[in-house]
Image 1: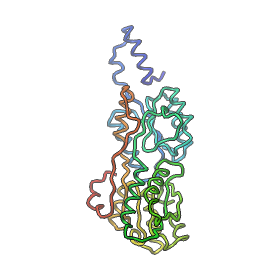
Image 2: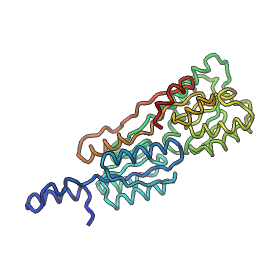
Image 3: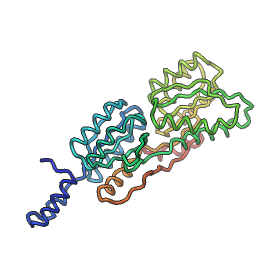
Image 4: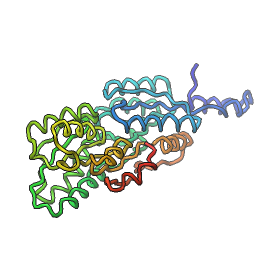
Length: 321
């Protein structure tokens, strides 16, 4: 029989009553964490996965890891597998916001607590998860918008913006768009003339930017990309079209991964808003608290900054991802 932590607790209680087993027999039981990752779509996600794996090892937590390859059905299968294996805690970064209610109810029925990392879900009953830890995506969009408003304060307009959105239906794509539009919407000179998903990948970012350039050409003043990888793909498209990225087209992106700093140091990207992928230590700490029955905040927000190209060279050596 496979024992999980709840089974062991009952066994310990019975054993202590009969004197059959010393408590030390259970002292070395490792916490088992099932983690269902989105995929490996970007430099950011690779760093996020590494942070989770290394932090689990350091914390002495038995990590069962799965890669959904950006497909919700794969993620739901993985979560059901963790429920069947009776892990102690399930954590995942949802591919999209909706469609998880049923599987989360299954986890709750099995008395397995769930932690959301990096991205949230939309559910009617928020008791289906213990906590959501990660960035404030709306605020990231606002930071991008504020930077642009300040940068273009002396420009009479119109300021024509093209937008590379993240995966359709994902929390960062929805919220980064919302926060950005909230800020630029206060001034009618800012206009989003094209907006399309680039799925958070370099290849799709390049492909969609090529289409934008074909349709709008020199009318484009600004590119707002929901992540650095799409921006880096778009930079290639801009150069291939004979234009100068960060000069002919102002480029704003989100994540602040090393690739973005390299692009900024090369003078090809204007600014990147930070979104830290290093959630591993925070996650392992929360998992230990949950298993120990300690209270955990419903929302844990990551503290982050914003990096214009002027500071890139000085900041680059400090980057861990």
